[in-house]
Image (cartoon, rainbow, N blue to C red; front, side, top):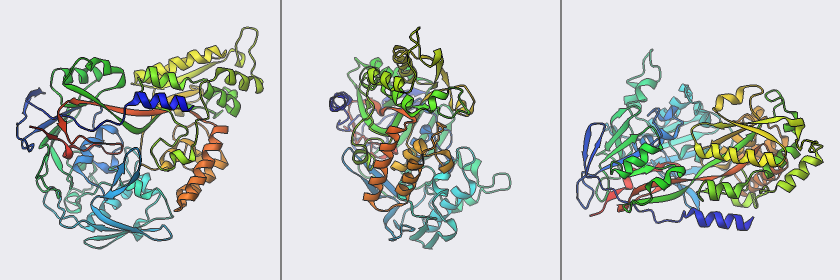
Length: 553
């Protein structure tokens, strides 16, 4: 198991100095010519960022997609920021310069940064923050449901702006992950109360339609235009509190393309300065000396959910914990990471991604590794022997469904089906979407990605392992484990790190005995850029901070 982790770490190459070039000469995109200047200070420079992720909304109170992160997190700001690297985790100042927490964990008191202005010139006050919270909870994110991240914790009636620079937020009950929920832009980016209220109407009660395409924030950039499905163009906010002296990029063109081939073509033709390149397409940019691939850890994990709910699958053997343990041993984790994902995937010891608090301490080892002999023994011990035709489960065919749009995920499921066949288990692989999770009798395992919602272990434990009756089981596995539910409640409510560690350790042990999914691995993000960029940074929560990017001489 140590050797497996070592090989993966060697291949990942994640510890790379974050440097890249923003050089834009004459770039023709959608009939608009962007001219990059040559100033050493970055004045007038333009960055073209190419991605296959399309922004769905610019209203942070109802956004929950990776395509909306880049524009929203550069237009808006949050009370605090999340700081992460491979060694340490913590929270940094944002619009708040300091904060305190009461000993009972119910009150959070924030002191705001003074003289911060929104891009329309209005001064930021605590009333804007209180209004932003109220709008999230009252509007209740009708399209995404992401408001539940805050509605589960904040007591709005007791939350108040004390004066222009001080705000007190009260929680309904102690919640250890609260700071993590407000350190990223969804749903609590801070809005300008005055200009937002101006657009409230009977037809658009919370200015929801208006705010989806008319953002006003305190961030370094503001919206110039948004051509949906094509591009988002951001220009510098001259009122940004950090100022524009030094090295920065003045304009950012987020170019949304249809597929990975369009991304690599744009890079090869010099029509993009930085781009998200899928792992399966990295070979397409090989041989271009002015392009550099940078690999960064994310908190996104690939999983294969096991359907143990008999009401939604007619295969009763999925209810047997030993069968699910056997299915976990039948997956070839190392080969999937090294060969299929070209080393851009880390192994997982448990459902808490590597790098998040308590991940290493509460999940000390990887229980399930590829071992078909052990898988066979477990199936035999449950009475599922090979029959005369070398089949198990009376020849029943398992249905593996792959959440669409990812060729590596499909290849991973195909490879797993081959391993199952070696065990005497038939399996089919088909593409589908999350709607199939609600259907009856249509799936035994669902291959998908669990993306970060907020940087705390609770985000993963609750969504993946806690029962639906206790507010979890996002992927509808049918898990119902009282030990996990009880420990998860204790972990989320405790302000003691040692207590949380013990609770998550218990959850790890129990989830190994009663697994409800295969933890395939933790994904990297691969960004390709021109090789002279400076100030390039990647944040696993915010992703790209365009403000730090600048052009060298």
